Image (cartoon, rainbow, N blue to C red):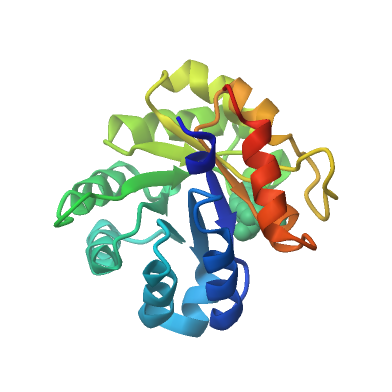
Length: 234
Ligand code: C5P
């Protein structure tokens, strides 16, 4: 895969002008942009269209988690925005995962890849016990990824520490999208368990979500290019 197309830059801002400026500046040097609940709640579908108009693939990081009918309808409602990636919570269960994957097939042109979030990286073993899940996080992540895969989901969002186990459990074609990425020249900020872009791809990541190392750099374009260069040859 071309190194640039692996990189999704997280536009974690409610400011549509700033997001569009960043997207325009980075176009061609990253594979796409990630837009989340903050941006969408502030700017709605029109804000997403402004970003798409820049000509960038868009990952709608909405993490849908609801009854199957509602999730399928939400995915269909998002299709006119032409996302390249969209996600749901694997904990929504097999029926929900199946209809989510099916709903994406209704796309007129190219369909988005549907990814599942397994266990949020903000949760640890104790948090799982609190909600009645006795398996440790690592085991539960693999279980949910396998479930998602069996339901037709294209891949998962995972931490860098989970890449190797998921690649082994789910095979070479299951997509792994990994946040918490830090080049060795960037500050880790509030991310505790980070990995460099090259290490993550060497372990088996398909896509990298990178925010502040690019958006917070003095020269975001130079930072994105430097990351793409570090991925050359993989
Ligand atoms: O700025 P930074 O590179 O830390 O941004 C990472 C992006 O990935 C943010 O949008 C963050 O919410 C998201 N994310 C994450 N860790 C997860 C899931 C998503 O950092 N486990």
